[in-house]
Picture (spheres, rainbow, N blue to C red):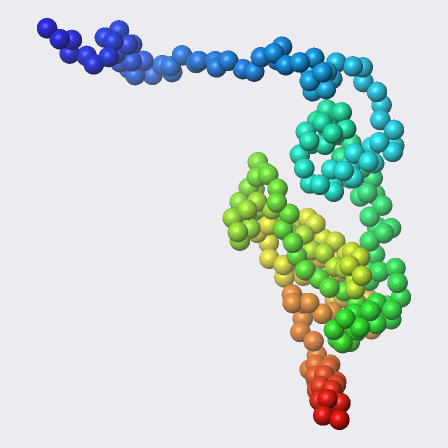
Length: 243
């Protein structure tokens, strides 16, 4: 007589008991990589059996710059410089904190140049008058945080931080707002920024004019003046071609 069970009766019974008693199946530990199978030079390079040495200031700066430049993983930078992942992580954090302390010195709005010079540089690009900065937002991808995770999901369903940046005609950054999650709109970031508060209080309002897609519209008289100049220049160009 054939066995009514397709599989082993003992295994079938054990499965029924586990189901009734709600027991988890036995955990099977899969074999891992045999470290001793690698050659010695690979082990010394990867696991670094040598004694630890403190990095110099030049080495710390070069490692951080290499990480910033190629956007690679910490492991790749560490393998190229013969450093561990933890060391590269500490180096990058140390340099970032140092740059953060210098931020108010180098990033100043509207810039280190005179306002008149900045306006002239923008005018030479597109003929638009009284512009001292170009503003836009960019999303920096991040790992999903453990707290308020939904706030960091942007319109493309990616976790990010929405960063507002202003630069001059030479692409030099003059203002940064990097504290808002990806779900926040660009208009709100500008409205809540320190620069917007300065403009609303009237600070330096006569020295520069706001011009961005998220700020208030340009006054009508300024728009008519600009359109008149453009029409006049187009008319003169056509007469020059006919002559």
